Structure formats: structure tokens, C-alpha cells
Image (tube, rainbow, N blue to C red; front, side):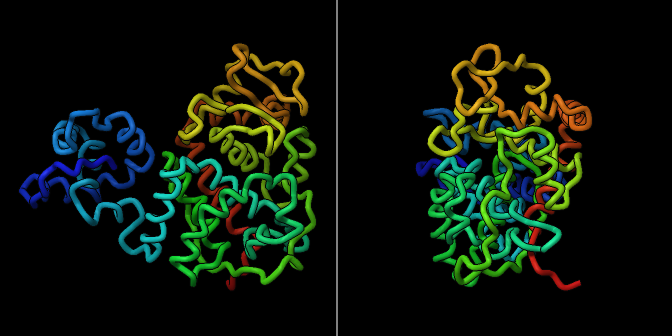
Length: 337
């Protein structure tokens, strides 16, 4: 949150106690809109944090003010009983300082998306992307940046496995960008070398259509509704020529987690971008792009109803995405019943 070193120390006034006492009541309602409230209401130059806090109103204002005024407020987001609260805060700082939310989500996604339910190989356990062949998979190009960003977390919390760190970071990144709370469980272990890494080619190929999409996601144990819910994460970030071969953002707010990906899929007129290689689609004004695998969601008669569903009901998408993403992060993790 914004701060100003010139502000005087905050005393526990009656107002302070009333504000902090209100936090439990608004905790659930404010996970998504709080980030946007902070972004839109942040202090401008010459206006102190104290005056900003005083000017906040409503439920969002109370929660933001309480978060600033109370040393315990950050546990408001993660839960007082969460023994990983400090890890979450450290990850959130890395995400925020580097504007790395989309990249961190991609790391967690790709580290988990190699799972094969038949042989129970691949998945988030092992952190195999540290080794070849997984590190050399073209679909993972650029993710060394994300792994390097999280090295300070491993150094500070050496007892945590890389695979736990990467998956937790993905959950934290989604929440920090205004997304839903992602249920996450510890317990992953790391491979000693690359001998247990799955063969390359298990991750989705964005140049392909519905048949390929289903083949990849069905292999992991997802159904059509979960597929469409998960691909909605393309509301984040943008493509880079040197990584995927594609170029451009999906939405006009690459760091905001909302259902804009679906609304744009339905509302924009998408056409193949002239000269693109690999082929990608662009909006009528040329500022936004979609991948062939994205367009497949509105050309396939079984996928499209879910696109329409999520375009019209962001709360439902948040619920479905949170469940599907938590399932993704659990793939390949040995659990005792």
C-alpha cells in the first residue's frame, strides 16, 4: 500500500479500533475489488497517506484503511492461521515490484500442466522445469525469468520445495491481481535430477484447435467447462515474439484479473493478422490479439456456451476458475487418503 514517511505515527484511536474490528465482516466480500479500490483511490502527489485514508468511504474504504493502520491487517487477506502468511507476503512483494503476476501464473500453470492421469506422470510435483528436458520445452520459453525471481523465496525458506513455492506463487499472483482465493496445499517434493521429467510436448499448442485442446486437457482429467474456465487466465499478460512467437495482449488490462477475455472474444471482430507467423488473430483496431486456440472456444459448439456463461457472470467464472486452478496445482502430487 502507498505510504508517506512524513506522516506521523498512527495511534490506536477509537476510529482505529472501529476500523480494524470491521475487517472480519468484510473479508470475503473484498478479496477481488480491494485491489482495484486501492489502484483507483491511491494518493496523488502532495496528498499524504493519512489524508487519503481519511477520505476513504464505504466497505472498501474501511478495509483499505484498516490494512494500512493495522500491523496485523495483511493476515486479513491470507488468514491468521496460515503458517505460510509470511511466504505469501514475500511472494506478493516480488509479484508487485516486478509486475510479474502473469509470468508467475504461467510458471505455476506450466509446471502443473504436464500431468497424465493414465500413468500418473508429470504434474506440479518435482519442479522438473529446473532440468532438461522440461527446461528445454519450447512452451516454457521465458520462464527462467520467473524461476529466478522466486529464488530469494527458496533462499529465505529453504525447507520449502521449489514445487510448493512455484504453485503457491501462482495462487498468490492471481489473488494479488484481483482474482479469487485459490485453495493451495503444501506437500510437494523436488526431483534430484531430470530423470523423472515427462517428455516434452504435453503442454497446449496455441496454434491448434478444439481437438488438440481436448486431448491435452482430457489427459489431465479436465472437462469442457473446466477447460474454458482455465483458458480464461488469458485475461492476464501478453505474448512475446521471442518466447511463444505470438505478439500482443489479449485485453487492455494485462494485470487485472477479470472476465474481459470472454467478453472480448464475443464482442470484437477477430480476423487473421496479416503476415503473422505463427498465425494469430487481431481485433478490428489491431490493438488486441487472440490465439487460434482462443478462437476455438467460440467456434466449437460445446465450448462456446461456457464462454457466453462466463462473459455474463464474472462471479461464476471466479468460482469455477478457483476450483479448476486449485485442481491443476494438485495434479501429480502424491496424497494419502
